[in-house]
Image (cartoon, rainbow, N blue to C red; front, side, top):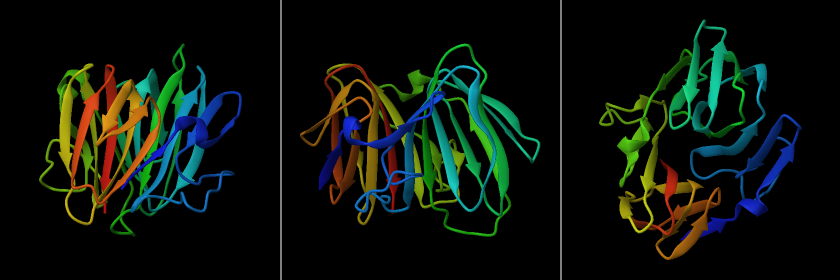
Amino acid sequence: MIELRPYRELGGAQHGWLDTRHHFSFADYYHPQHMGWGQLRVWNDDTIAAHSGFPPHPHREMEIITYVRKGAITHQDNLGNRGRTAAGNVQVMSAGTGIAHSEMNIEHETTQIFQIWIMPNEKGLPPRWGTKPFPKDEHSGDFVTLASGFSTDSKALSIRANARLMAATLKAGQSTHYQLDKGRKAYLVPASGQIEINGVLATARDGVAINNEPLLHVSAQQDSEIVLVDVA
């Protein structure tokens, strides 16, 4: 099963400094059929104006991944962590027993991010934060694991979830594939471009919910950047 969720049909809100779209029910947007996808709970598509952002606020018991598509985001938290994550790179925050953080766009340009929340496998663990650069040429032509809850993905940022986040860049005409193990689901969003997944066409920022499709054939109709979450 492959379900296309066009960007134009997503929920969301316009706050002046923030233009946000929600792939799943979030904040004031509620869709009873779109409450999550397996352990994946939130996928927000955020456009943040220059010199603005999310002021300090708390989280608990959630794995929060930020994939930066344009510009940069600067993180600061009550554990003393501070870091800037630029386009193409990823940061991970395991909220654990509780953390307060801010996510600010201190740049002179608009920042665009995917903010992805995944339910943790274990609760009651201490919070932590990390970021890592993943140059786009490392994503070229195939999926690369950026964040993972599996020890076999030793080069990826660690999350406390039965899930992994991957990204790929494909030139127009290029194709790749991804194997989904039995009992697992995927949610895929082309950050840019246009792609076809097992015959389903998706354009930039559309969501694609995938279940009972063991082998995904992904081909690029245009130069494309693709983000995929594999979850139970």
